[in-house]
Length: 335
Image (cartoon, rainbow, N blue to C red; front, side, top):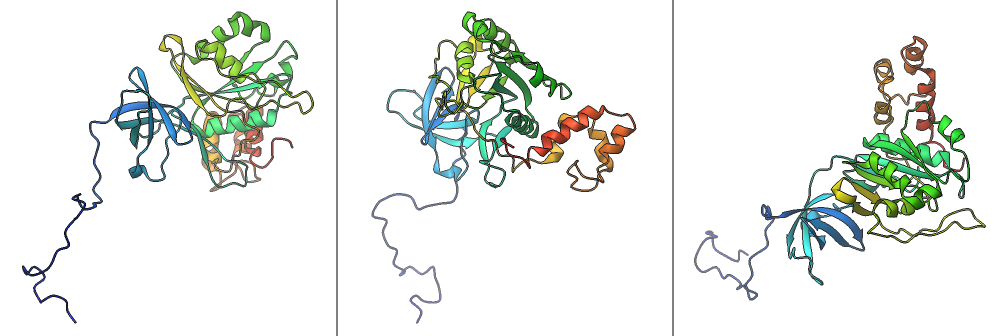
């Protein structure tokens, strides 16, 4: 039985009144053209601290972003109360396109990627030469993640007063990764920070490394007015204690660049890595991949890189280094 007549527009159709007096829902979202641009400094339990002009503002993700989240280093559009006053809360309504995304997975079998930082252009891999012992496999994995994300790697070796860096540096000589070697005396007198700061000028650099290597100590030396808590190495396990629990972006003095201190990592899964992106960090080998079979792993019998090197187009040590890095996707850090 029809409730209404043939004409659905007739005047006697009853319309239920809107008691709340609000507008009906719509799928059309505001464009927020007047939103202010901010830089995400840190994220803590859903609260996002942003730098807007010369003040910090606490914000939360707006509903229209859906599952898209903001991470440290993101450029975002913010609306609402932008005063930065206590107990005020703004809204992030848009995450701008990223120039780079440093990602990792919990392990190599985990398909879920975790974004570490966004928009960085350099990755400082901090490792101690002793106390705790260096973990070359973790360094290799960080290098692969940097190449995959398009970041320039920088190797920072600490505690050279306890052990020589020569053996470790020899294994990375063919890759040509720039490096800085520091010791505790140089950290104390500030000379180590001065040398590292030269490498960071004008760049956004993310610092990664496992706990206890002196990463946060170095960041504190680089940005002396923003001290973060530091820990110590457990004498029994030889591992450091996690003291940095969330990533934090800090401006270098005189606004000469940014450093992002990240929590210590004990694993760096590479499930997401595409070998074709890693090989781009070896420009002398890239032309040799033209004759590789489709989806070549660059470590199989039909790989064209073997003939490319045999013909004298590249140093065999470079191909060995590439394959060693790519093999880290199949081996865990402790293997």
